[in-house]
Image 1 (cartoon, rainbow, N blue to C red):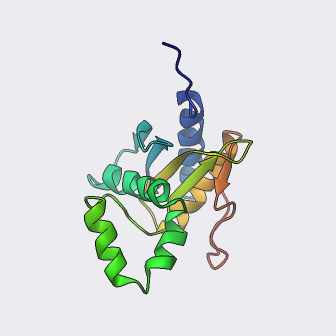
Image 2 (spheres, rainbow, N blue to C red):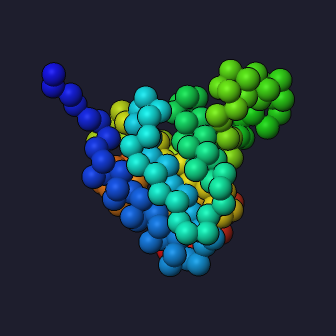
Length: 157
């Protein structure tokens, strides 16, 4: 059997390495990073020392929700803000596996196809998202969204 890996472990590892470096340089709280392939399956996960015990589930849910809904967790959260009934339906349909706040970023390849997502939890959601974007870029891939929230005025690591 010949298999093709769309999001190889080497790329996922590079993403995690950069995310953690950016977080440390910016003095962020301990981060947890989940990298999922396009099918929502884990490729790699890293939890820094001191990160809370729910952080892996939150990071995974940010990435999984982005994949499941086809948009970043920030965009999903903005869209759901006024749609309480749909939020409840989404939570029920996903078994609670969607977290619709910034920190879940889609990964696109050079042709523009979604090949996975990164979810980060540990610091403010906007900081989590910034780290995800930086990690994806470091692996030579394209993040969606391409830029952090313009209302966030955080430090660039």
